[in-house]
Image (cartoon, rainbow, N blue to C red; front, top):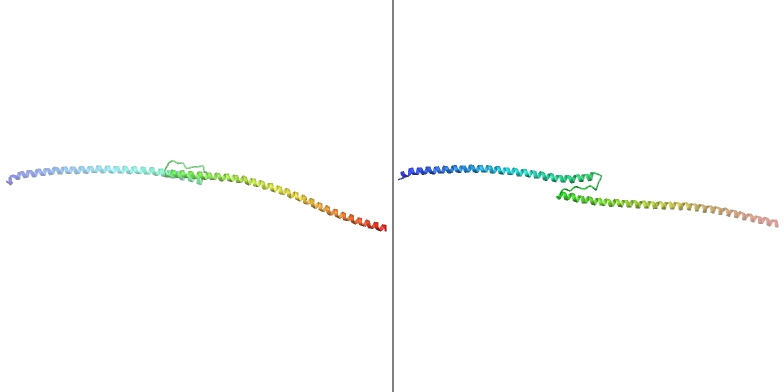
Length: 193
């Protein structure tokens, strides 16, 4: 009985082997397809990664140029104001609304305030200069008046001194006349006697 099954078993074994071989080939083909799919998937991943890296570098360069350009714009404006003749009418050109744009805007407001303060100081200095000129002119007038009064006092003093000298002379003359009159009176008295 087993012998009858031997040829059948052998056929079955061969069929199973053929089936296993067929499935193994399919499995190997599937593995190769998966490997090929993984290679293409890996290739796509590498390609997308490279593209993302390239775009990141371009964006980083663009942003860094933009930021560095804005910083250089602010720096150049500050250097121009600091090393120049102090021209406070110059302002920072603002090209953005980011932090650097806000910095430039606030710096421009600061410079406007300084310009206003300096204009007020200049106006006050001009007013002070005009007041100083007025005080100087008044002081000169007072000095001229004092010199005229001094000259008048000197003239008056000279007149008073001259009058005093004349009065002294007149007194001496009067005393001389008085003595002469007394002598004449004595001589006359002597003559009468």
